[in-house]
Length: 203
Image 1 (cartoon, one colour):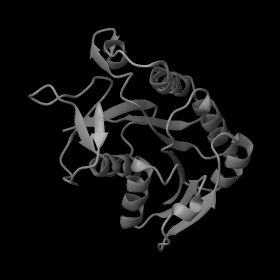
Image 2 (image 1 turned 90 degrees about the horizontal axis):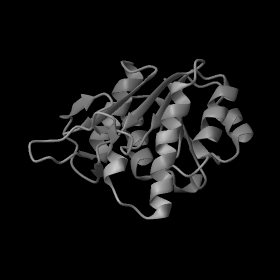
Image 3 (image 1 turned 120 degrees about the vertical axis):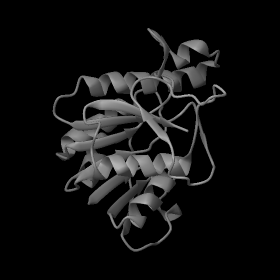
């Protein structure tokens, strides 16, 4: 596939980029600082900013799918979704947040946390972006929430997938590595099972 990856230099984006390339996909790797993207067969670095929907739409046009791995900031997801819609690309996977996952009926993970204002605003943006996507009818979208804890770790290829509920292990922990998250994301891209839905992952 020809995939546009927005936010390709971050912790998650760089792992998704590596996973896409390892499976033979052609990737337009979009970042504010494309010089940070290692030269590799199959990748075309491009300078782009998710804050500029019109310019980003031009970079996205002509691809089979768009994946955004841009960290949330207030109002950014509206611009991202607008850019994808303008580009004419239908398939869109957004790296989501875990804050909106349910931990009990009617209760989200974010409701159980006491957070400083700036962090809370980021988590609320993730929740709002999911709601925006749920109102979209013209996109084949997927919102992929990680586990409550995502970070460096081994690539195991062994994990559990779920829907809107937080997945925890026998110790009550919700964890996933960047590498295994990237595996599941590219699996979804190649064999869509969650179009128009949110799904999640954890060990």
